[in-house]
Length: 82
Image (cartoon, rainbow, N blue to C red; front, side, top):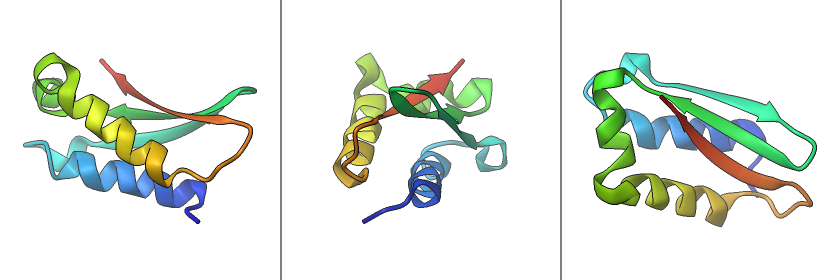
């Protein structure tokens, strides 16, 4: 089962492979009462690549994370910061 640092690393890995400026990819875990929120930050020019047409890429990224997230009482969310 994946642990939290592994999830952050997975999100970072996926994002780095989508963008033109991989050195500007940041992933931070924010633990809230109800959820673990992974905040993904990329260069402004790469925002479209991570979100995708109609949000398809962002949805796919979230689906992958949900699939490997450890089952717990807390929800696991991925937020793309603008």
